[in-house]
Image (cartoon, rainbow, N blue to C red):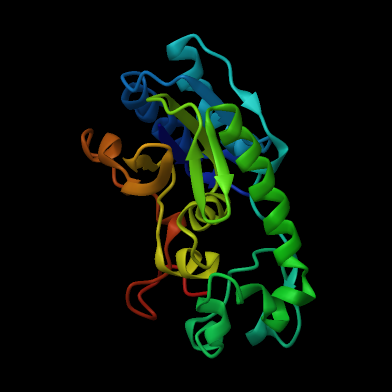
Length: 243
């Protein structure tokens, strides 16, 4: 089975819509996804994800299932460098803050960090992954501790139109690692596609492996540079996002 995690296009977060650049990205994305032979489409309820999916659904003449658990993972936590002010993005920490606690690198103990506990982030994480596992079970892959039982193995392709934070969360669950490592270590530009495959090296036992993360070839093919919404400044003070 193949999973496609698709980040929404360039966003206007204030109004939860796409910018004109984001709409262009969504159209170019549709041209790329039209050849993927996608079996099922799933989409976040948030407007920017819905708008990103619309050109692809129109092009393929399909409909998407809207899943509440696919919305961005917005859990208020006290950001360490802001004297306790709440941030709705639980991974928005400075490197010098989160790397001070080795628990945040651990696939089991990351939720024991005091900031994560303050926001009850672990419980919210478990609720999302439980819904995700239920969906995978419907498609033939049953979670069994840290592995998946390939009850009905298949070569379906499932597409998820969602968000950066939520996609990293799902990937951390599939790969049994701390979500903080992926939240901090990966970059997925708006409208990018992340491709995950199952591998079944012995009959009945499946694992998931990323073949591409944050792919923007559909933009570069047309000379369109990715929006900077995914990143912070490459060199401090150069005018790009710093905080």
